[in-house]
Every structure is written in structure tokens, then in C-alpha cells.
Image (cartoon, rainbow, N blue to C red):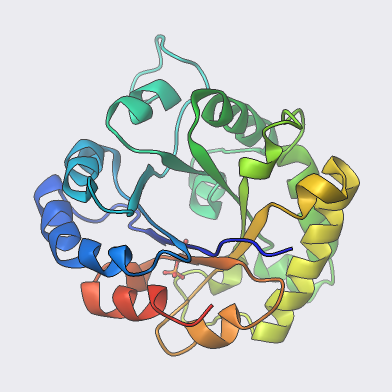
Length: 252
Ligand code: PGA
């Protein structure tokens, strides 16, 4: 099964709308020549509209970093899938470990957010990952299995193939310690097996499983060379045009 690689940047809480427009102005032409892969940027909510406008006419996908599952309501500070879509963005990250760690995103909430994203037509990038103590105590696969099952609970089987699953070991995020290619491949094989159990082989084979955690221009190609790694989710190294261009242009 050949899956189209998915290479995304996650800007986290960095860049104003103006800074996003300047970055995208320099970067978007890169994506025009990379038609064999999807290239995306998850920008802060305040930059969504400007970023989507700046990217229009190019294949660059613009996305948000979080959403609320309700369409609208008394939820101060939140934004809905419909609001994201109205900015021109077409993707959203769900359940990033920083959301899970600092903002109470449980698997239940992730599942509801996933439902809202799919229903609205946004490409959902659902994140899972074990922390250091899980890995050191040999619980990595148990933790991942329960995160995947919980996060995908109730997903509409007809739409599940649109999900992008991001494996991001928490201990590798922003630490400079990336998982080795072998470690990541082993987990991706396991995750594909989990997806097959939950969704059946046909759907599971279409889902892109991408890796994130200290991806840099120096290690991107080796990670992408693994057969079960369908792309990358890049934090720090997506903030500057040059390293991110190198990463998204890696052979894959
Ligand atoms: P990092 O972040 O590349 O800076 O480790 C990855 C992420 O959090 O998505």
C-alpha cells in the first residue's frame, strides 16, 4: 500500500499573523514542486486566516493546533472546527502531548474533537506518545494501545482513512533526543497492527502514521526511510524556512 507522505510543521505558540505571512511568502514555492507529498503547517489560531490567505494558490496545507468539539457555545477562549474551516484552514492537530499534559486533553476529549474535525471536513492529525517513565518501565506499547483505542473510539469507519496518526514520544519532544529510526519503526508497526484491529485492514492501510520528536534536517531522511513511517511532525525545526525546507524536501 503506498501512502502519500505527510510532512507537517507545528509552530506551537510562536509567530504572529505578520510573521506567518512572511514565512509562508518565502516557503510556499517549495511546496509547488513537491507534489508527491502533503506539506502542512499548524499555526496559532490568531494567524490562521492570514496564513491560509498567504498559502492560497499553493499546495501548502494550513491547519490549527487544537479545537473544541462543539460547533458553538459558551466556551470562553475556545474555537470550533467550523471556525477553523471558515478561516480557510483544512487541518487540525488533536491531542498533542502538550495539550494532554497542560490542558487536560484526555482520550475521551480527543475522540470528541476527532469526531468534530471529521464531520467538518478538516484533516485530523491525532497525536499519541509515551512518556519517559512509560518507556523505562516497559509500558510503551500498553500506553500507546490504550491511547489509540481511546482516541479513535467511535470514529466513523467511512471517514477513518482520513485520519493522520502522529507518534510523538513525549521524551523526544523539544529535547533534542529523537527516537532512533529502529525504535520509531517498531512502534509504527505496532500502531498499524492496532489500527487493523480497530478499523480493519483496508482502512488501517490507508492511514498515514507519522513520527514527531526532535526531527531535524540531519535525521529526517533516515527516519523517513523506514517503511512504516509515512511522514513527520516537526516542532522547533519548522520555525525557520531553511531547516524546514530541507526537511520537507527529504527523499520519501
Ligand atoms: P520538536 O516538537 O520537533 O520541537 O521536538 C515536535 C512536536 O511537538 O510536534
